[in-house]
Image 1 (cartoon, rainbow, N blue to C red):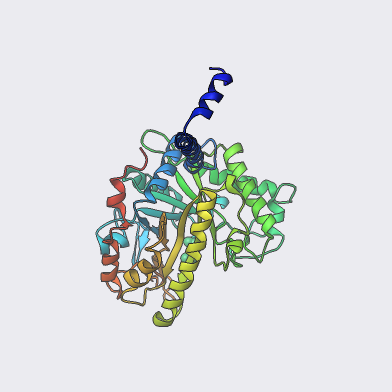
Image 2 (cartoon, rainbow, N blue to C red; image 1 turned 60 degrees about the vertical axis):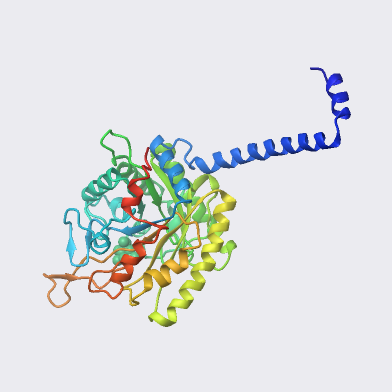
Length: 402
Ligand code: BMA
């Protein structure tokens, strides 16, 4: 149809019809825009992410409308007074169910060690990861890498470290070797049908804190961003690791600006998160923890919404849980109004060498989920039963990898 015929038709329309036509056009435009946002939300930062990884990413987005996943570090490997017992989990002992998210750490894989920094054999870790995948659970991995500048621990701070491993630095080649070891591990995580198992990778965590060699005391914001970008590019392009969703993670922050200070950019991140711990005597520290964590969660939610990322509380806890109703009155109270993907409690210290008799082991006194001896055990069961809280059984029903 030529313009000559449309224009007179348009002018001959009654105002109401014109209004409806304009409205229709606007609705279609809004829908198109939404589709654009939708596609931004639904595809991970790694443009060559494997099908299973994309599927997990989409499932995580959908799950935001269903509830908050509960996670625990090293849950299957050890707990209070035990280690490496098939099927055992401190979370399951108390609540009857496994967590939905399982954390592990790659620290010391860079040394080609057989065990991670907390003595978990990497071969066992692989088996746990396969078991978790089979039951429809989610795996997240952090990396307490040693300081590549001097071989000391992740907590050793040296202002030359990051610059020395970036391109052009003296330790750049060494860093590439380290990333190769990381890549070999990720690529070896296979399903029964030989597909790679998707992992939420949280390297260089708590990046606004001042205690790691990649932290605020040791390198500038720009150096940190370059470290992240290089790591992302090297693992995806050089090593062809395509089973990762990338988790940006800070420690404390006081403003949106501080949260974003070390953010490497939307093209390098899938999940945005921070860590928050309650410290101090139960009564006095409770109010503060709730108030400040809620404030930070609001900032996180805004950031996630504006950048189309998935928000999570990647570590949370109150060591030794010295409060009978911590789970329902503090933790749940803090998170319940936020559309968070997951929360993860840190490890239950397992066994440690006895101080007086170092050839014997005794239960560690550091733990973040209760045993029956802890005063919050009953409350933990209550917490598990909230509609909004998702442990393994509920998650399995969601078929997140299909
Ligand atoms: C820290 C502590 C350490 C541990 C490290 C890595 O928070 O629990 O004992 O080695 O995490 O898991």
